[in-house]
Length: 547
Image 1: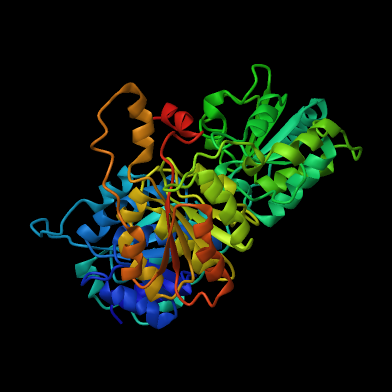
Image 2: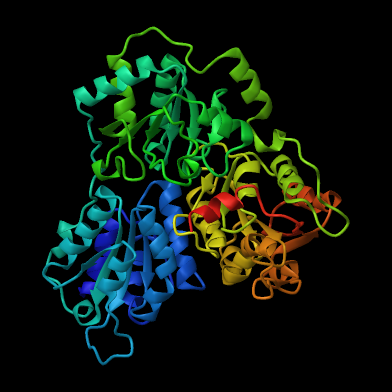
């Protein structure tokens, strides 16, 4: 058996069952070996799309996924998606063929490229160690929550592995949960017992049903309100004390209540500039606590009074077992309850509709879609001026309802994000929310949606521009010709790929969406929504503070 086949079969045996990619000569045998072993392969139309599909699949499924690419340009084509995954600490395995002859047109320093974006570079170095090294790459991705680039040199791929080499292949096992120290747990309980208006903010490290149960129980005991970062949106869905998302996406009431908290505990949450509005959501006298199983994350973005190294669920459960059984009112007053019920959702905040005969207000559009589309949904959102509307106006059923690939803030990842999330959750309606810029960047993957038969809804918030730049630079009188475009019939583009499509200018045009939802959904649907472009989204000024 050749190394290429042995590595492919070993990776499947190690638990890598889903592969995305674009196959060329260098990764042909390796990819086919994974498929022959039992893995599901999805061919994307561009390596950039394949990378983000794999990232989104891994995030939504909670399992490690793989990206398979050709040497050299196959890898460079995928680098934006790989950078996003690496910044988000997605357990992802990138399989890249590699040339060793420096005079080859395909030669680049692939190891340096991986390191430049924060991925971990590894390599298959010999036939005798190929299976062991492949399984070690999977283990590192899983146990360290890292994006790993496994380079597979072409000369090594064609070597014969020793007899019985595949017997070494095995799943890496689950990542061990980090147990908090008793002293840290006692200190956390002491802080909570002194809090009068406590608030919990859960992030990526809290995205599990077990963590939700433990955090809600602890919050009930101390009267804490509950919020999440954007990547954990939906974790507390249905809880009457949930404030939804903390940060730039916060509704006015959410921002007000977070700002008035006297104690903020971040659970698996970085408490970074996006989640805390550059620190402005934290009061001058607020006690800040951070719980994370990665000690290096504690205090990385802001000073904290107490940092606890520990798994979120374990730490919350240990705190429940350490503190007294009596419950406190804390922040859960009657007035707070009434305000949260009436005003915490963006769709309940009054606004003046800016729509007319030619363009629909994105708030009106989003509220209508929230009512029309099934509640069991998984949403992938692209980046741009529009993004706050689908992210906050479309409700999600749980922490797996929104796949938020925004760590790198790259435009063009939204469609591929929704494809990966859709394959991880086939029981839900997949919704891709894009701007016209991101839709045109990722349009090649319309073919992938149709080819693999996804009954997806793609919503394009189309303002014929890179709206963020228009609204950031326009008020100062800068020329905008470089960021504005002639009208594009994106609905016609989608029909060319086999989509059903509708152009929406007014709420009455959404009748076609209702009909699609009620019908057989035999083809994906694209909504080319011509949205108003008179002003920037509420979160835009906040976003540009971080540039």
